[in-house]
Each structure stands twice: as C-alpha cells, then as structure tokens.
Amino acid sequence: MEHEVFLPCDIAAVARALGEPERAARCVPGLRLDPEGDPLAPAGRLRLRIGSSSLTYRGGLTVIPRGEGFAVEAQGHEARGTGSATLLLTVVPRPSDDGTGTVLAFGGAVEAKGRLDEFEPQQREAAGRRLLDRFAEALADEVALAAESAAEGAAAEGGPPVPGGIGEPGDNERAIPGIPPPPDSVAEPADLDIPPPTLDPGVEEEAPEPEADFARRTMIGRSAEEVDHAPPRGRYAPEPAPGRTSVPVATLRWAAPAAAAAVATAIVVARALRRRR
Image 1 (tube, rainbow, N blue to C red):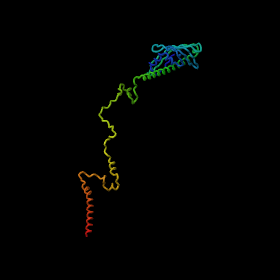
Image 2: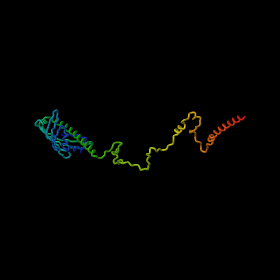
Image 3: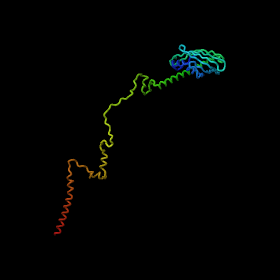
Image 4: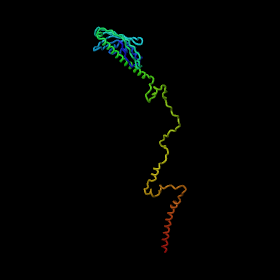
C-alpha cells in the first residue's frame, strides 16, 4: 500500500520529529505507551478501529533512518486471542511542489494472523489509510507545538529583538533592514548661567500701580456732586505745578486776624468819643 499526506510544516522539523522514536510514537492514534519503556524502542497498547470492530494489540516499534526517510517496524499480539500482526513501513518526507509544506510518502505492507486477517482487503486498506492520516495530523500538531515552545524559550532567554509593529521602533526593519536604532540617550541642553529666582517671600517685583486703584482711592469720602462740580480740596487737592508759589494762601492766613483787630479798635474809639460828648 502507498499513501501520501500533506503537512503544513517545515521539512527539517518533520524529519527531526520522525527521527525520535518516542516522539513519533506519541503521534500514533490509539497507542498508549508504557511509562517506563525504552525511548528508542517504545512499547505499549494499540487499539485499532477497523470496520465496526475494535482490535487491541500489545507490542512495540522501532524507527531506523534509511536513505532520505525512515524505516518503521512494528509487531504486536492480540490482547484477547492468539492473533498477531507485523507492519513494515517506509516514511519519506519531501518538500511540497508549491513550497508551502511537507509531503509524507508512505509505503508498506501488513502481515496478520487471527482476527485482522478475517476482514476484507478493502477494509484493512481503509483502516490503514485512516490511521496514517490521523498520524500525520498529530505529527503536524507536535511540530507546531515544538516550534512555539522554542520561540517562547528564545524570548525568555533574551533572543534577538523582533521588529516592532507600525509606529514602533524598528517597524521598517522588515522592508529596509539595517536601519540604525534610535539613540539610547537624549542630548542634554547646554549649561546656561540663569540666575535662580529669589527665595525671599518678602521681596516682590515692582509693578506699576493700576489706574483703577488710584482713581478709587482719589474718590473716597467725596459725594457725587463734589466729584461732578467741585474741585478737589484738602488732602484731595492737586499739588501746585512746579514754579508756582503759595504766597496768596499765606497772606489770607494773617490778614483775617488783622482785620478783626482793626474792627474792634474802631468800635472802642467810637464809644469813647460818644462818652466825651
């Protein structure tokens, strides 16, 4: 019997998996390996589905590299009965025609005694092809899982950085390799002699006095009529312009008492004249 199965995996990874007997045996559907078996010659119990019946065999297998592929030999005895079966199989991995994966080419024959020999050749062939298809599917999952574990291990050990996504450093590495990374340190600004601000809270910068505050203080204590019609007086009076003298104000200050004294003297003189008459 000859059979081919496509695997979406790298041919080197598939060949490595087939070269490890215990790892390849774990991909056989229905096979339960003995926990303390030999990794180079795994043994266990295989449950085979054929037609509407199930057959259980207990035995082992060996995998030997041969040429570009591997030679597999498996032997087993029925768990219930005296029957036996022997499988001779060759597995050759080769790249697919479109380069997207690997094709496994199987070729082999089965010699059976007992219950397996009672089935029709078409039933035995259908069971064998189904077993190889499921084996190839499990092998592809095993290879993918191993690749994922290797990638996680490389990332944990600080492997080579992976180019970042769009908008991140290294996003052009896929299209334009060799772009230097951004500098790790940013250039510091040049030292300038800038005086620090004073720390004394009592020192404040001088600012021009707002005109509104000056006008408000000027109008305190005055009525609206005085503001509209009367000139400012007293402390609100404007200071005289430079060059003008305050002589008239000083003259009025001493003239008023003198006039009052003159009036009083005139009254006294008038009374004295009346008495003499």
